[in-house]
Image 1: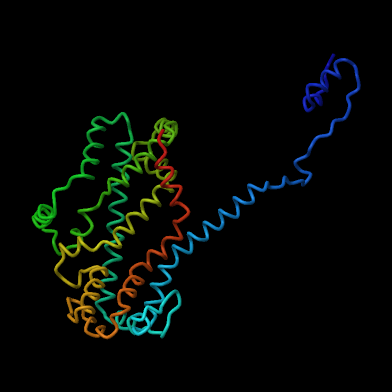
Image 2 (image 1 turned 90 degrees about the horizontal axis):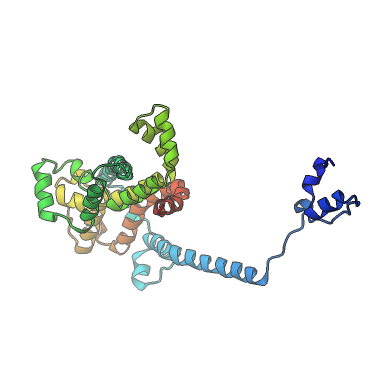
Length: 327
């Protein structure tokens, strides 16, 4: 007997009835397209409410200090000294912003920070990527040695004086290279990228090799386009670290026109609190409004990073998690 193709969509009981010559009885089936929805259980509803409440509490705890700093930067000295400023400014005051932003040296140092951050991040991303990609290959000779050498530097370093002697011996003091070269590679970031590259399917690179791509061509045209998440995450790590960095410049730079903005703001705070200039021209004007100078400096320092973060935030979590998966 030839079984009609329609029998493939019915259950085994219906097939047996058909083979026996009995009429097939229609069976009620629940249709997914009927629009019926399964109600959430009480436990799921309670979990949802608790989850939302906890997340809102975490957001409030995170935003409260930041909003307080912004409010203090816009408040008058009297209310700040009284401790009456919370998340809303009191005694509107933007004199500190005016004094800081009217100083030409502030804009010079701000430009320096942008240049240092851009150059240092580009160098760090290039070196970290090629190093992580190389040590992610198990067929690399001496792979264990290079990984061990990198990890060794996480726990041991030459110290401040040998580093200064080295940088000075290379004639890099009072140059941009003294700021961007010494800390160009973060071993922590390299290990995250290495783990990410190790979990990438090897078949992709094998197919690229069959098509005639070199190692560098495979890295540029196959691996990097598929690694946007981890690259964006590492870019954020390096950019934030370089933007906030001040110690390298403090040690290796002597000229005030080459300082990053973090050094300028540090000198500004020191000058406002001790009534000494300490290298910042505007400090003498701030001795009377020193109560909110720290808040102003924090706002001016963190603002650019806040503007960049939303554009790469969607890659951030996935980049860290993907890089942490062990194959």
